[in-house]
Amino acid sequence: MDLGFRGDVVDFYHRFRRGYPPTVIDSLAGTLGLTTDDVVVDLGCGTGQLTLPVAERVRSVVAVDPEPDMLLRARRAARDRGVVNVSWMLGTDTDIRTLGALIGDRRLGAVTIGQALHWMDHEELFRAAVPFLRPGGGVAVVTNGTPLWLQNTAWSRVLRGYLEDWLGSKLTGTCGTDEASQRQYRDSLTAAGYDVTVTSVDYIDELSADQIVGGVYSALPVNRLPSPEQRPHFAERLCHVLEPHLPFTERIQVTMLIGRVRRGKQIP
Ligand SMILES: C[S@@+](CC[C@H](N)C(=O)[O-])C[C@H]1O[C@@H](n2cnc3c(N)ncnc32)[C@H](O)[C@@H]1O
Image (cartoon, rainbow, N blue to C red; front, side):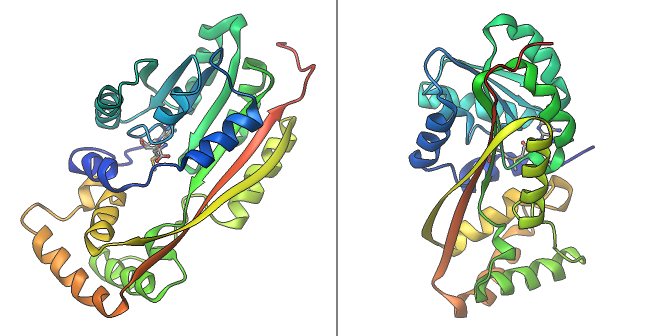
């Protein structure tokens, strides 16, 4: 499947997508008992939003993504931040067994998935990961707020209308952030034998019009991205319709669905 995280979209993703506040990483590391002895697999690493802060807490991270451009940008971000304990791997969630086998007896402290589970076969992934996780370690499913055009604010509704006109289609995908998806993920973790905890970190931020435009570009598949020639017009018209709805306040809820392996679960 071509998701379109390529070309110019990658740089927009890196510049305009939110990272995760330190309290999120504290909570995740605390719940899973992550230490500098742990190896973590970060699936759907993108340009390293979750990978890099997690890498700073553990021995090493294997960061996996099917999009080569995302991996290249992530590698550059790691270098810029002085993070040297990440292996960047072209792959998908279906590589979890191979990765688990590679890591062998050491076993994983965590498999993290930041804002990417909606593209994976979550039931199969949760089941497949169990034997490779150390007791007390687990799977962390992290979301990073509601898409910009689906929020309950006037500016977000105007943005949705503008984008639906531009794209010629309705925008309904929640990227796994809605309650029904979260419930489904929670139930699947429980069914796969994990003890599940749910936590969230909520905060408020104010966006500039440029950040909204950049956030939109970061979320479009590369074949729907306005061309470089179209972008000034696209941005100018969007800013014009948004302006009456200043300030662009965003309530961000980062959710962490953490499934911990019960002590005593053995490698079959
Ligand atoms: C929205 S980005 C999330 C990036 C980052 N983890 C974050 O929290 O912002 C989703 C990423 O998942 C990747 N992805 C899509 N399908 C995947 C799959 N089946 N296995 C692993 N990664 C996948 C995409 O290429 C993209 O880089």
